[in-house]
Length: 259
Image (cartoon, rainbow, N blue to C red; front, side, top):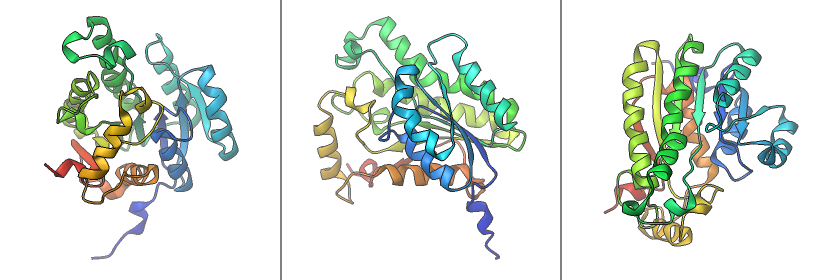
């Protein structure tokens, strides 16, 4: 067998990454690495307030930045249209956005409001399906679509609350999207990192305890790094992962495998 090292490259690939918030966000880790690996990128942040923190990151490396609040009508469509206008097509898409109202996130799931649950589902889950519908026609060579999930989708994790059922729905959505888009050569995965301190995770109550428990439980006895998460995402966006789709893939120092 002859190893084709080009299958591990992102040179010439074109990608859209949603959800850069600051230098600690998973979306930014992916942006940095994929840019270094040769991909052309358009990335999004939430709004003009977020742009003040994100633009100093993207501007020096020449990555195009747009704003996109998926709750605002037309903004997701505009972000995708901008990416297509700039790059012509897409080879991969990364959905790294999640949100729930704090009152619902910090309370018991049985006490969650209908509006809060619906908004959390719309932002954190259904927007991935919307994104796929918009992007798939512009992926003539197939490619990858990634979302971000967490162990709380599969297990009841203290303090994760409302986001557990929402992420469970996202993982199920990932499998159905993989089935529906497979004939187009589009591969769909949910990446499940271990706990990492990001702007989104800072809204979870007792997050320090959650991280400490993950360290104690995991075989590697540590948390994963932003770079390790980005490494997995980059691999899933290369041709080297062409035989994989429909999976929830953990990068959590082995925490998910321990009882």
